[in-house]
Image 1 (spheres, one colour):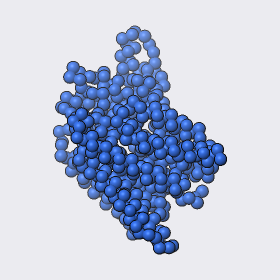
Image 2: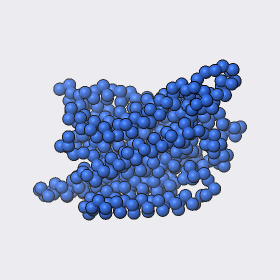
Image 3: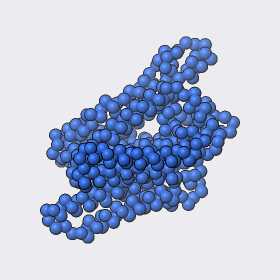
Image 4: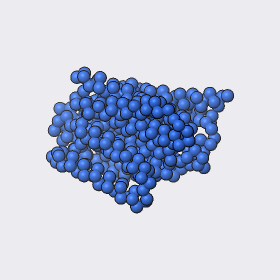
Length: 439
């Protein structure tokens, strides 16, 4: 009885986190991380109440990803630990030692507190993805979570449309504007609602083979999913840039490729050819957009830039950056060092990728890219190997592709709420990469 109650509490907390996303997205980061850490801590305490089979199978899913997933945590830990001066420490520590005329050890990070918080935040996200995987191994719970994700992202899109009319919160005001986070939710919503429509079609076809099914119920569910996708897409068209729309389209291409490959039962070589064609087509679109503004740095050519001064200030920071970075979460402290009388650079980076280049360094960025590719391989392979539940993994892979592309457009994925939402989506997708009877 206690196990059933604890499982219900865990599942309820996951629903609450999803439902709170639109509200947390507009808090500018001061509330979301604390609530997320608290909720995940409670969920971990109640994890032993979950069915042992679900935990074991989730561990089997995450095992191939464990080493890759721990690399970012190891890199953040290296940025925190003391290192001898003259090695890989940030130059600011050498300057401090010279100014104080005292020999002491340095660190890669220039703000140890924020980097330590980033480390715990990353471990929280890994835990949340695993907890979601455990809780959604059950098909009914997985469908409930997918429906909740679709519903909340659709409400976020409506929120974006309503907020767009107020001058104080227009996305064009500043790259650090909190509507970037709601834009990311709307982009996810477009993909997830399409996945929900695919789910409805496949459920109808599967069950109709066994016995006739009432078309009205499935038609209503398809209509809901289609309306959600249209609302999210309308919000994006109304409120954001062409580049974010293209990032969302790339995610939809991933879903379309999975559906095409499964519907046509393509052979392995045919799959490779179709995927290569899709990759080349997307690359062509990127090349066209890349050439549209050659005067801007490649790192933020797809972003909204407030002024030429902000562009120049960011380029100064990047030119001084070393391969080890300045420490995860340290952008605000780093920007304060470079800030001039005009107030540039601001407290927020131009986009997520710029923030990562400065904070993570080239090595950390490579580690994060390897993790992203590993997740995409597992999800895409799971989507192609599954039967009627392939849309979970396909939707998660599509969201990751959109997240990667949108990282060049805005700062939404530096927000804890969007990171939380991504972790839940990935956990849901990973949970369904193997069947219910797989060992």
